[in-house]
Image 1 (cartoon, helix red, strand yellow):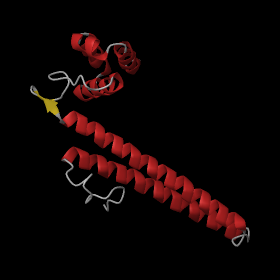
Image 2 (cartoon, rainbow, N blue to C red):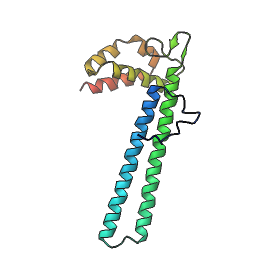
Image 3 (cartoon, rainbow, N blue to C red):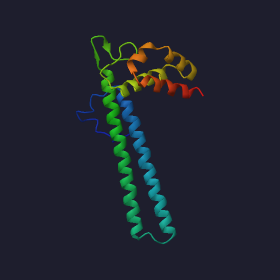
Image 4 (cartoon, rainbow, N blue to C red):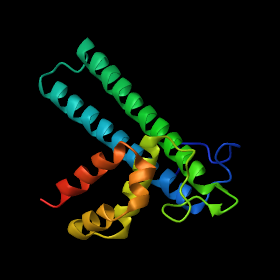
Length: 164
């Protein structure tokens, strides 16, 4: 796989850990899927225009430009999302005097409540695939009530919705 979603030799990306490299690979796969879909759409456009003898029309140029702009927008969105994921992972990989931040052993209180929501959600989603066991374990987690604040009920409702 050729990585061109980001420049891995730049200072921003050259010291990525294995988890972060996996994030880059996933973003690259998503970008490749978007560009392949765009190429497929362009080929269908050409075939349709050839079929109707209108290949030299301005419609071809306009549709080509629209497809290119839409593809570029999606790729930029994937790149921005990757940057946010990498920044979030950097927040998680740092720590304090008690060690690396990880829920529930050493929760990171510097995170916003929405980021805490994601941390706790990921913890329980990775802990078990059984939605009923997940809901029961989360319901008994007293640290989560304090750590999540108002988001506790939202996450509880989310886990409960998986049980149905």
